[in-house]
Length: 82
Image (cartoon, rainbow, N blue to C red; front, side, top):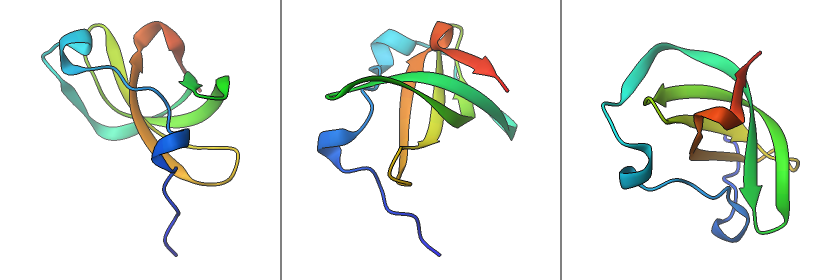
């Protein structure tokens, strides 16, 4: 069963490559995390999977309150392991 994608207008804000830097380390196995995301509607905490990270940021895949999937680079300080 396919999961709907979060529409562009409701996606979490994502960092730009110049912000998250490198090198990018990809997870051998995705890590379960909780993360704060920022959308046009405000901030919310989501359960997520960490797919990759740099020293400054984490690339997450999350499910929003409507069951839709999104991805975003967020600051590392916004992420904690579950």
